[in-house]
Amino acid sequence: MLNEGDKRAVARRFAAAAARYDASARVQARIAVAMAERLAALDLPTGVRVLEIGCGTGLLTAAALARLPQVGHWLATDIAPGMVAACHQRLSTDPRLSVAAMDGEGPATQGPFDLICSTLALQWFPDAARALSLWHGLLRPGGRLCVATLGVDTFAQWRAALAAAGVKAAGPAYPDAATLSRWLGPGGRVERQDFVEHHADARHFLLSLRGIGADYAPTRLSPASLRRAMRGLDAVKPVDITYDVRWLTLQASSISHG
View 1 (cartoon, rainbow, N blue to C red):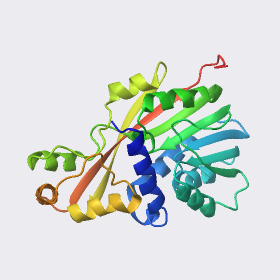
View 2 (cartoon, rainbow, N blue to C red):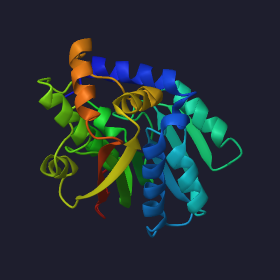
View 3 (cartoon, helix red, strand yellow):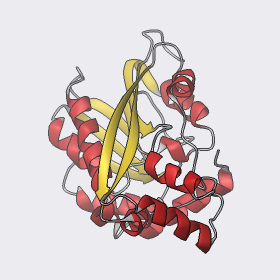
View 4 (tube, rainbow, N blue to C red):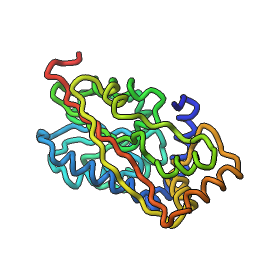
């Protein structure tokens, strides 16, 4: 599990990657579109008030705003100011949007919101269960929480190559379905959808993570260990990498949290 120091390091990496993020964020863009389509299928009221956690450069923000004409106000937030600036630049002409640099693990904003959504941010939080509880508390009665995060089988091919090389995985550990269900609480739903990204080789895969700022690991591999694992991953080319995406959904009780 990541700690607060890890989270700050992750934020710095994402901030530094803001200008180049979109060039490498192929699977992230696909997940953003999939989330936007899920949101568009919801029965949302006219004038809906939305909070987005971890907006990045605005991939989900743009895809959702294009599909949700009923949005009254969309607040896009990210812990990395550079990402927030990129999101604002992408969508500066949309009057429904405002942006803010904010730690999504403990949002400094006032509810209630009709919808809180997030793609690929929750896995970076030291206390994801607490974050989900706080987000739930910001929903109006009947409001919806829609989150995409990474599950236990993410990067299974890379983890297998590390294990075969005798190396313990250095990256974050992702939760299984039972853990996610427990975090989400009563009434929550967890679904799985795999997204596979194709790479020419192991080097291309690792560079893609660096390109979006997602290459942080609490422990670093030695160069020799890294080379052994890369050779193992390259045994079958092209290299396919699985993103085990878990869709978390919850509708707030009709009883007010207040």
